[in-house]
Every structure is written in C-alpha cells, then in structure tokens.
Image 1: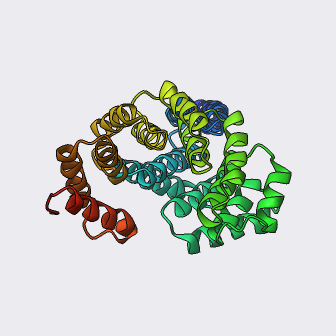
Image 2: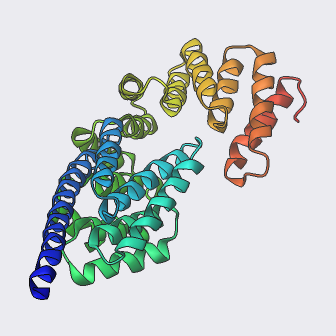
Length: 335
C-alpha cells in the first residue's frame, strides 16, 4: 500500500517534470529562431535592420529570459551604434551603457558561447580596447579558425593593414562581410589617403547594406577626389534614408562649398547645426561659406563659435589657425 501511495505521489511530479522540460525546450527553440532572425537582420547593417534585430532579440529574451546569445546580440548592436555616433560627434553614451548591461547579462549566463565571445570582441573593439579585442578574437579563432568576423576583429585590432592575411581570409570566407568592407575603406581613407580605394570598398558595402552611414562615407571619399556632384548625390541618398542625419547635411554643405554654391552650402550647414550643434566642421564651413559670400559679420560669428567648440582639441589646429587668420582679416576679434 505504501509503495502504491508513493507511486501515486510521484506520478504527477514526473509528469510535471516532463512538461517543464518540454516547455523549456520549446522556449529555447523559439528563442533560437528569433535570435537567428535578429542576427540576420543585424547583418544587413541598415537602420531598419538594426531596429528589426532589436525587436527579434527582445522577442527571444521574452521566450527564454536566460538565452545568452540574444543579450550578446543586443550588446553587439548597441556597441556598433554607440561607436558610430561617437565617430560623428552625436550623443553616444546611452548606447554604450545599454551595450554594457546586455553584455554583462550574456556573460553571466554563458560566457563560453562563440556568439557571446564574438559580441564581446566587437564591444572591446568599439570601445577602442584593441588589446582585449585581440585576445578575445584569438580565443574564438583557436576554436574556429574560419570565423570570418573574428578574423576581421583581429585585423582591425592589429592596426588595419590593407594587405594583412587576416582581412584577406575574412573576405574569402565571406565576401559580403560589411564591417570588413567598411574597415578596408576606412583604412585606405584614413591611413593611406587612398580615396579611390576607399570609395571602391564603401561602394561595395553600400550595395550590400544601403545605409545612410555608408552613403555618407562614400560621399566623403568622392569629395576628397573632387567628384563633388557625385558626392552630393550620395549625401542626398543618405538624407533620403535618414532625414535627420546631421553628418550627411554637413558633408553635403562642404561639397557645395567647393562647388562655390554658397547659399546651398550655408543652408546645408544650418540644417546640420540644428540637428547636431556639436559638430565643429559644420561651424567652420558655414563660416567659410559666409566668408566666401562676403558676409563678414556672420563669418566672424561662426568662426568664433567654432573656436569655442574646439577649445583644447589639437586635431583642429589647422582649422583653428585659418579661423583666427580670417577673423583678423575681416576686422574681428577671436574669442
């Protein structure tokens, strides 16, 4: 009798355990499906793709609150957004905070997953911590030598040399790896001043991921080559995709300046400043445009606003020197 009672007591417990395991398995399967959709959307590297990825990652977490890859995906995505906004001098702090919170959660759940480690490597890279980006990427590659993204991160952390075997292998494994194409474009642009090569890689990336950021990069590379009309066209495409994209207005204003279209340059820079009042280049080039347009009062005003904005920032020393010289030539006083 006791054994029969014990059996009857254990029976519902056994059924409940099986049901629980089944529920957990279903939740994990759903979370994995949503994560994969989010990752696919993320890899499009467009604003719409990022928004879609956030929605899918959060859906995965709702299905399984302990699904580490979804938190890692959010951490990776927010670090991408924070890094870009930092580069263009827009508010970025909250994106890094969100990245940290999600990466911390992912690492607390399962720090050894490749997807978690990859997101961590990206995050280190976007925080300019090349040492730990390098270490983390090498750890991934020790287990999976054909992880194209880890190869790209390793290449980027080691100095972005265009002929490096890491970047060549990364693009052999995945010719459509957008960060690698952007990275090569930026390496040629910043390190080698090879704007034609930069434009080629930015153009390839834009064909895969037609985002406002990439059209902005491409337009800037074209501007440096003197292809101002083509550059304006790319900036206009960026603005069509994101009408509040301050950097595209600013760079379009610079192209207009070199085209001697003073009124268009001023209008574009005014829009850029309204959207992002922290962009020194916008203040400098609107001053230059007013200067070229024979409006000394406005030129002096904007030159001085530029000088105030860049006080103590050595990277603008050439512009600072020009601004002070023009203020003096126009009969004004530098702040």
